[in-house]
Length: 315
Ligand code: UDP
Ligand code: MG
Image (cartoon, rainbow, N blue to C red; front, side):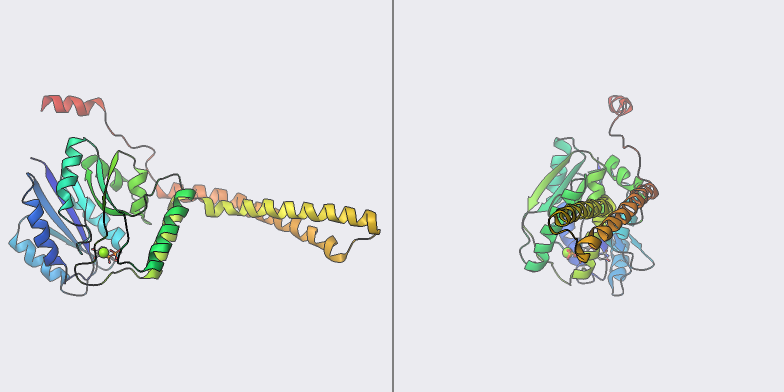
């Protein structure tokens, strides 16, 4: 029998945990699987941890990890994933915005299609402030233009993954984590399940606009060197404008016999700026190399070897 591990990061979610637990139990008991439910308390200051303790005492399939302070959802997810022991691993929000009943469909697809991941994607953002949706859409457009890793618009962290994909995610031990990018970076076949946005069951969102903005900028920095390369673009623009001025100077000198001070000085300033920006651009090339080296991402990730099929035959 397969075992499914479900990781649920929580920060101050006393209003949601029990609601989530009963919705989750309804689904998981209908599946022919063993399971473990791993709650991660991400530095909650309310009764969240007490509720975990009660559930763990009552149900031996419930485990919990309480972090020493708030590390953010990314840190909490990593802690949870590290603790998983199942053949398949899922991540869900506790607020029921990631409907646990989709787990049935996810499990069916991952088994039938023999793929490594079934992930969920919201097709609309109903109930979200329009300005937040606008910025979210802009972010996805930008990051997909700037990065080689595909980051699907509306993609949630909510997904069911094979053991090998989970291990691949865990092998990326970078501190500044942007899971939506890492899920794409590790490769493997991903099937997308689409669903309509659901409002939070209870409690409040933990993401302020500022936090989301920082998260988005961090995502771009983690997966793209375009912001560093912009120096070269400005260097070339500066150089071309200087050339324009030099041509204007020659024309002016030939027709009027003299050159205005403004027209004489501007190309000198632009040429100096262009050289400076070129120098900064070169330094940034090295910085971006150092940046990605320090992340220590694996050089490759193996999907399968002959040992896998031989093992299967033996079993
Ligand atoms: N969360 C967390 N640590 C944080 C912020 C959020 O573990 O610092 C959890 C939170 O309890 C919830 C999930 O991450 O289970 C998603 O958070 P939320 O619902 O506030 O985000 P939204 O759905 O509004 O994007
Ligand atoms: Mg939510």
